[in-house]
Image 1 (cartoon, rainbow, N blue to C red):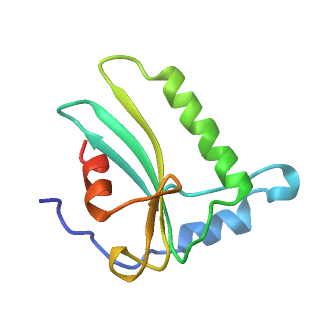
Image 2 (image 1 turned 60 degrees about the vertical axis):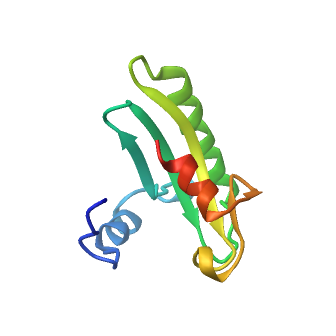
Length: 119
């Protein structure tokens, strides 16, 4: 079993610092967080995961950044590591039990997503 999170509340202090101190989008600087990196040290499999709730989509600029990251990793990861791709889970509301869920824009079940992410 995976150990519990240290906190269910995300501290936004550093996010605020970034917004205050780094160049803004008018300079070309875009900043996005990434929700999860799933890595199996035994199989050397790794994948990236972004979560969206309330039926939200990635913003165009965010999709562009993640597409670039995905392309870089597909082209640059060397054996024995296996890059399995970039995934977006979109919940219609907040979770599996209160609406539909999509994995890379395909409606999926909790079981299908669990199988895909169990690397």
